Image 1 (cartoon, protein in one colour):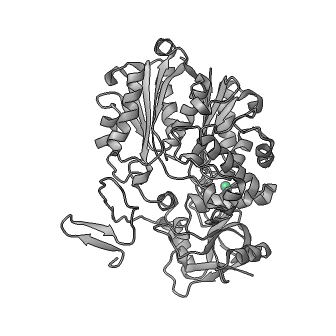
Image 2: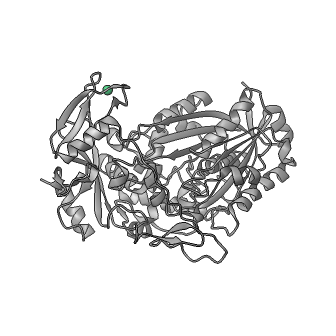
Image 3: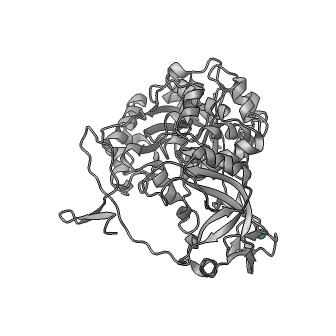
Length: 379
Length: 174
Ligand SMILES: [Zn+2]
């Protein structure tokens, strides 16, 4: 199996843009190709991640996405789940030695479509769940109440995630939400879906992220600091909420598989930084437990301890995470890009203090973390 | 339909009347997609919904793991085996978790405030998602207080039944 290196990444800001989707996609891809001094036709393969139906409404990925990303007249494929899988699909043909370079693009303009809750209700089955109001926020609120009740996690501990992540986002030039907030601001924000408060829910953002992957030999030619793909795991749970224990998600399985592939035996010690997908504040605490950063039910104590702060021993979401910027579909590729930048030492003002040898990127979609995916990167 | 959509005759397409985007400082082009779909329910869900119409909540039992799942299933998702034994479930159960929806969004199923819950019916091995109601929801603080005392709920049936999930109006505290 061949090694896969991340050569370079580019990303757009999450702030609303007056550019058309096509122009908005073109810019970061063009910037990436210019950075590595390649023409679009010199890239061996393209993998795109976009959802052109509900999260765009144009339903014409074939009209815009391929041209905008420079992918036409090349081997190319597109996926609709989360861009973190586009990253893995991009790694695969390099691992098998078929291609030397793959360009991965995740794209969305969140400002152009209806509210997240309107759209995610269409992810619910139309017979039993959608008619009784299930969408991402209502499902997450029920998961949060269970989390508070079963493990005695406090609303203050959940609010601290917002304070930390939005605080980190102040130093990320691409972040969508830039606002210094304190715990009281979060707790006093509108209880839109009790126990969830408005400020504990991710926004909807623009976001195009482009990433060039290459074989070991090619990567070393294209950059002096390649970041290596080390491991990957994912798992999808059954869809019906009532069949699941909402606090026992497939993240444990996804993480176990990624750790095994990467040779990580003690994640809390071996992982230097994590970029995880927390569309709702409490989920960062729950995901940290299931990633093995602390014991089950200890997510509240973990944030209290300061370990996950940007200055802590295991910074979580130094970029500000999804609470600061939520480009659906593309958000998983953003996590991988940010994790890679931390290893390269090129995260800029939100670069963590210590040396980063191993970084974790996580993404999720579906209700209450139905699908979970974990990527491990190494220096 | 008449109140929800207007037809733009020049463009020959429908536009949703009660949805507006925030004002933009740049040129945009609005398109609303209104398309009809027609999904088969299949025999299991048809029987479940026929059951609701008769005021019965039906589940199915897995012959392998012995679990009773509701709504009724054609196959057990875990064992991946046929579920052929039908069970009429008690109409009472306990609340696993809930949320109080107190904000608006386009396409919402109900005028807020309303409670959505996971309800574990007696004798079932899973929860059913439905509304909790039958008391005043206008003061969120009072609702939180009241819900602390509620653990058991029972189904309240709609006056008019159409063979869908709304045949149960909501579950009310016992
Ligand atoms: Zn079974």
